Amino acid sequence: MTVSLLARLAPSCIVLLAVSFRLGAQAPAYDWDNGRLVREWNATVTEIIRLDGFSPPVASRVYAYLNVALYEGLRRKDLRNLACAGQLRGLKSLPAPEIGVEYDWRIVANRAAAQVARALVYRAHLVAPMENKVFEALKTEAKNVDKSLAYGDELAKAILDWAQKDKYAETRSMEKYAPLKRAGAWEPTPPLFDDAIEPHWGLLRPFVLDSAAEYAPTRPPRFDDKPTSRFYQEAAEVHKLTQSLQPEHYAIAAHWDCNPLVSTVMGHEMASRRQISPGGHWMVITGIACDTLKKNLVETAAVHLQVAVALADAFIGCWHVKYTTHVMRPETFINRYIDKDWRPMLETPQFPEYTSGHSTISRAAAEVLTARLGDAVGFRDTVENFLGLPTRNFTSFFQASDEAAISRIYGGIHYRQAMVDGIEHGKHIGQAVLARLVLRKD
Image (cartoon, rainbow, N blue to C red):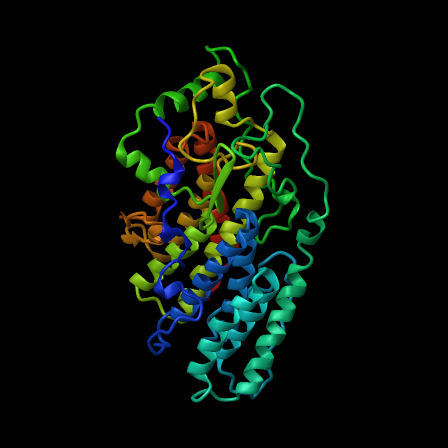
């Protein structure tokens, strides 16, 4: 059974995420002992990314550099906080503050985050409302405002200089992906049959991984269209399962859809909807969890940074696997060999199938959050409320990541092996981030 996505194209889809996410929205006076500054910067950039329509890998890159800026702007509040320089690949040093100057680290972080965000998004003018809101709340009580702003500028420039060397710019001019002419290779999928997204993402410099190939999972089952083959059986499982989905299965698939731009074609008309990316979903969860546990400002910045780095490296690693295995999507296989009229519940993303990106990045984020915040942290996931979808409640980050993974099968866009191997891949990447990016002496 296929559910029309038009049913979800409601007027609420064009509003912003929530009152607290609205760019420049009025808010109560800041409590500087909590992590609201970090949460709101991530929420602001999440909304800008959604409006810009960035692909999931590109969105993850923005989050990583933004949160380096926030953490480095704040970490000197406590000498036990450790620098990113020397721990993140290619980042040898960052400018040191002037000795003897009493900076306002909140202004430093706010300025650095604003400058980095402006350089990495399309709608740069949407950064100013958040920056100005924080600055107006601080300027009357802060010391050395000009020095603090100048140091924030120095930090941002150094971070952006470092970012320019990650090979992102080079991949913008590389050739489009040409689908392989072999049985079982990925082909463009309905409804738009677009070009493959970010085929060269695996060439980017990782943040902590030795290379994009580190921890890469084993190759998927060999393509075979015989009904007795493993490949056919995995496709048949997707086909059978999606014929008898229960309401809860639909709810799970819809909640974790996270396709930045969903298109629905009916005849000569097309409707589209912008959603939060998979990485954006987990960055908002990170903010929800830090707020629930009342983490202070620097702790919140550190957790957001580690999650953002885990997401970024998980996308680099996963995309490396996708474009070295080139696996056909279930929609293509099922229509060709099992049922020509079958359609998945979710729109199939435009890139190869193996491994599942959401499974990989969700487990990487859950590893970091569980290690940093606890293995039985309950939270209310309100991320998709702005689309008219209900809140989902979780008792742990692993429960949420497991649900994100299985959602890809319910949605009809992945085989089980892509989910299983993606989870394993993400686990190793999350653990590597925890081991290689240490942000506290104790």
